[in-house]
Length: 245
Ligand SMILES: C[S@@+](CC[C@H](N)C(=O)[O-])C[C@H]1O[C@@H](n2cnc3c(N)ncnc32)[C@H](O)[C@@H]1O
Image 1 (tube, helix red, strand yellow):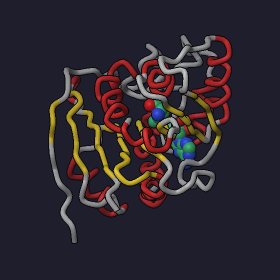
Image 2 (image 1 turned 45 degrees about the vertical axis):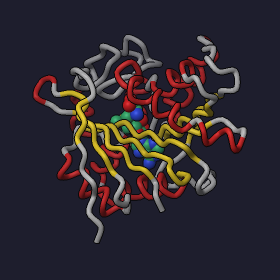
Image 3 (image 1 turned 180 degrees about the vertical axis):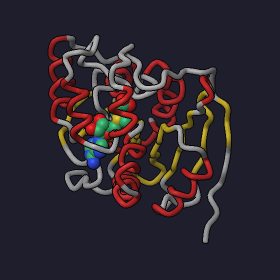
């Protein structure tokens, strides 16, 4: 049995707001009890009470993560010299987060960002936002798309075709409904990643629990974790799994 390599790197000062970064605290209660339910998420994304219904970010947003994610894309850039294709990035369970949008806008290398969520209201809100507030990417070869799909069954995505998979809070959500579905997310992520590709999970789950979960899901030995913040007594982490076999 392999042992997961545990590396703890402190990245940056605190960045946390407990439930969302759009300044809307109205969803706190329903999320506390029902974040495993698709109905709860549909309600949040169709809510007319939000200050900005086209934006809800789970515990932190793009501005808090860009310092970690943009260099990761640059690290992977040499691989596209061989294929001539943009780096393909999946944001699993994107909701109405601004992470995909930010990477699309700011990446120095050409990227195809596919943001996937099973919530129709979220996907429609993001498509609409993109039409009404068009974003010009830094690299003219970059593309952004929003897809309604189940992240535990990525049958439309070719094995070994993806450079980077992001998961901010989606595995946490699935874990509320049971371990099996959450493991399916990780297994699908690993299947679609190319060799050397990375799955990055953002979560408040502590290393003992998350590393054990990842080991059981088949993540292999190349897992590192980064301590993102510890404001309000809650520590957030980025777990990075590199596909090695
Ligand atoms: C905690 S929220 C995180 C949303 C977004 N990543 C963020 O950071 O704001 C979990 C998201 O996962 C989505 N989700 C949960 N299970 C899913 C599944 N099986 N397939 C696709 N999306 C799913 C929910 O609709 C919700 O948008």
